[in-house]
Image 1 (cartoon, rainbow, N blue to C red):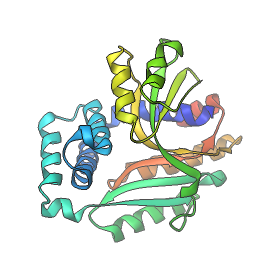
Image 2 (tube, helix red, strand yellow):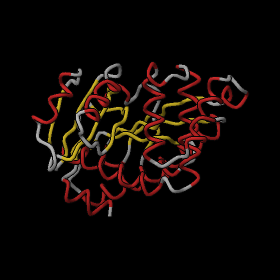
Image 3 (cartoon, rainbow, N blue to C red):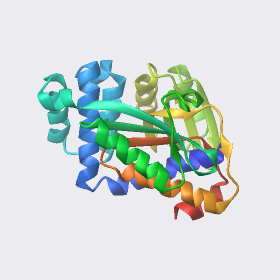
Length: 250
């Protein structure tokens, strides 16, 4: 699972740089608004909202922007009602399965854009359910393995984490959706610095890619999808040697 874990780390570092762009703030605000609309404005009782707020804070989104996005969602305003979450499924180069999370006020536009990007970069958009069964939605917390041992992270297991793995210099703490906030808070209270903490679609099986050209094409497709204003996240089930992934991502 080395390639996928390494990719998660690369994406996290990339997101910090990209967060300086106004477009990223728009995506983050939409995610907060939809989470607040669907599950209420209390992050302690709404894991999706808590996750969206944490991502916004990690990207240095101003507090006022966050509060306005929550208010828009809980106020049932016209803007909030016009937004909907749509999950697109498809295949990329090498037969890699992709899930594309979007928040949009125009599903026809977003659907056409996503289909075009798949086709342009050697992939194909599938029907609903075509690849979704290959993923489970989990809480995923990444921690620097050079700084902390697995013993340091036992607090996560005590708080309800399902598993802890270590590869490519990262501990990956896996939680169920309901335990995500509790486990994250337990780690933070124990003084553990988190590389990232997100609710993600985690692949249950992986596709190995050994050809560097295919890796580069796949990453171009993922980057193009993530650059779309309506796309919030892209999840993939590939396994690539870490050194090859670093070269292709660089």
